[in-house]
Length: 112
Image 1 (cartoon, rainbow, N blue to C red):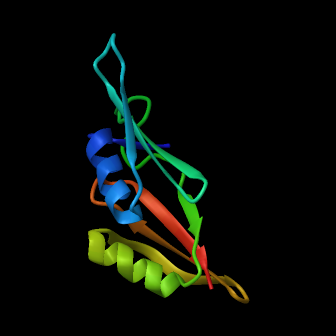
Image 2 (image 1 turned 30 degrees about the horizontal axis):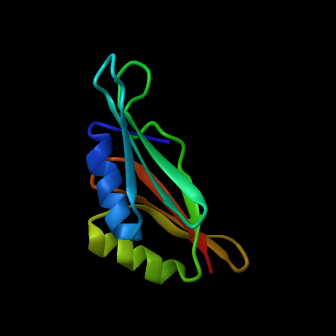
């Protein structure tokens, strides 16, 4: 779950990057929009940010396993992400990197 000012826009951006459909739901009581993308057996959800309880960027960092970290990182940077951290070698044959998506959520990639 990532917290975003505009959950639907965040999910649509990730849906395009991951070539995956976006699902949305609207809370009838609050009109809040919840959205999510499913790709590769993973569900990435977007919840409305709330400065008190769920601040934007306050989410846990989700890591995707990738076959080629440099290629995946380049793809995400070209799509609009910004560098946040890494790439870092965390053990022989295993590296990680973190990027900030256009909506402020930090995501990670892990791979060779």
